[in-house]
Image 1 (cartoon, rainbow, N blue to C red):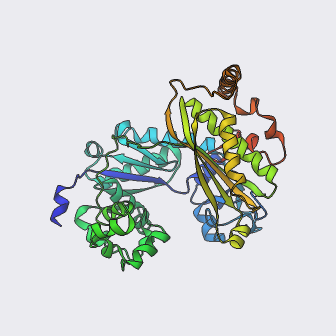
Image 2: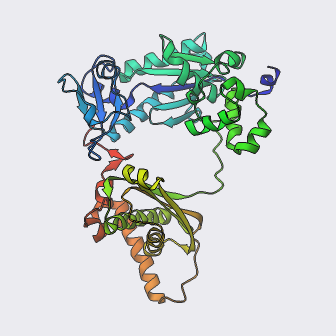
Length: 434
């Protein structure tokens, strides 16, 4: 245990808002989130109906409904159950309010919004201003959020962010005050005692199976494995979960991560299975144009594009694969047409008639747009006019919104751009918070 003495040590809270989307909806309707059966359900996506995005405890207990698992077909006919659509603008507004509350307890630069419903707080230098113990301060923050916003929160406490995350995910639910703690001195009892690897943040089923093949079945096995042999077998990513097994995390919230290779892209889950080539290519054009616009907004040029196509569940079973992903190096550009033409080339050379359920487009190998060479095989005037036209369209979108000016192909059958423009975070933004 002596190696822990050299590791950085602080006081970190990872705070999670219980059933955040559903709790926000309950509070907006004047209900206590712990006493009303309510679910937030996305709009119908396919023949299975919409997906339940969030459930309150009463809905789980009475109807056994689970977020991101249950669908519209699983809903009971009980009129007591409230089923509401998502309002992402409301949730973003509440997230900002919550983090503003947190800034009363620690400086803003010590707050990291980990997700829309979770935040990491570095309380190392401020916790003693609010209580006699770290746990009492966590309890005070819970009460403050409850009193001012009506939301219930859970808190994981640790000497570093990863300990706080594990305490939140694994031990909070066992405590009446919804607070869990892990510290260096109890890593053997709190982390090494975990028998199911998939309980741990960062370890999915595939990674767990790979570890099992190496005769690593528990966190204790992982913590005492040879890290050099693990890296040789599984790559650098395993060094992170090895550190997690030992409760080690040297990250600092105030340090921005350095990104070696940035990319810009968009993912689109289609509202139904697309089988028509014309419809699929229409969506690829839309997403390609949107990504090209993002490249221009960052004043970049791209020299590599990638296209990912996800098959429908039915065709994934038939063809024995979930889709395909292809990359292509191109001349530096930020032009819609140049990018779309190459995306369609990738699609036509790899698609074999499968029905499609999602499309992803990325542009990488980005360089600053400080000027570029003209194409010798195209008219100079045409290239200049195209560049100016793209710029004008981008300015209109920025000033008036994307839906105010769209390409004609977005009005064709299968087009999704207009509907996507209404979404926030992939879901309905909501017309009002009130």
